[in-house]
Length: 347
Ligand code: SAM
Ligand code: DTB
Ligand code: SF4
Image (cartoon, rainbow, N blue to C red; front, side, top):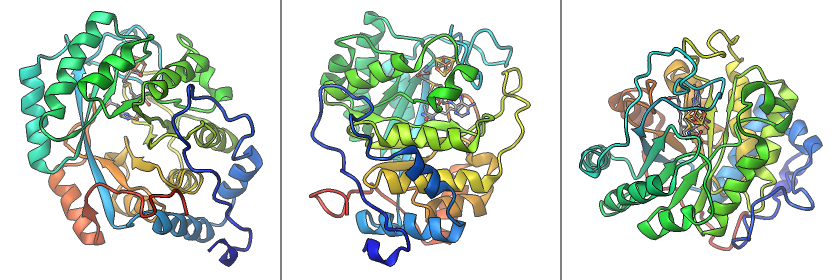
């Protein structure tokens, strides 16, 4: 298959068996040079390669619908420069306590009835305490009982937390690297890159699937965009689920006035994620409301096979559900859970 390409696409090792830790692989599967070279291809060539990888591994017409719910909003002590929920920025987000299982049940039922297959609960914590984990475990069990895939994003985890969540029925834990290591310090100073890798290691070790991605459009250089994808693709094994967020510029945050990114750079980022992580569910995540249908369509052509579905992300807007259903229909795409075509691994 790769012989049709001028420069062969080498499909590197697929996610291996669960390892004890998640960390950059000893021998990186993807060098920075390789990843940058993909970003620098002409758009037609890059999309062709991404589509070829996508079609070899998935039904390219299937798109996963994941619904988000902010189960604990705002008041966060961290300083993530993009985030409307950081207490230190005046963004108008009202802080609230952790939701009760009854409220979450109603929201999850609504999401399932609207067609979502994954339900992701987000909490604006730096790091949950033991008692928070117990409460979230109850929420996870409530959602799992509805037959939905479960995901949670709660901040940094301590030893034992991922196991408690797993035992309650957690399928995925979302914890993003957010940016390349050499840009990270420009955006967040209250926790470092290694803290994130440590949490990802705990999730992996507990046997919970890893959902890990980043944000583009924060003022990073093209090399730093490639750096983010290289980091993700070189995690060993790479994440099963990769959310690629476009920065949602929120008034009051330090990134509110960030100059817009050329939308084709976002499309390229999706394509390179697909090529370097062939079996991952690559999610076209935050930023769709600002993107327009044509750019979203290009993202699907570039290999995105998952979206956040529902009128709200955590605190900001997302396209109306009907608009998404209409868009999928116009593009001949279908809602569903994309599963690898070849159970032996990446093709
Ligand atoms: N507090 C937890 C944490 O930071 O790990 C979980 C919730 S946090 C809001 C989850 C992710 O949302 C962040 O890592 C970031 O990637 C994404 N995010 C937050 N604000 C965003 C924004 N304005 N635009 C795009 N993505 C954003
Ligand atoms: C992810 O990568 N993106 C989602 C989810 N994981 C938790 C969050 C996007 C948040 C966008 C800003 C907001 O709505 O507050
Ligand atoms: Fe807090 Fe998470 Fe927002 Fe950072 S991204 S400020 S940790 S809620």
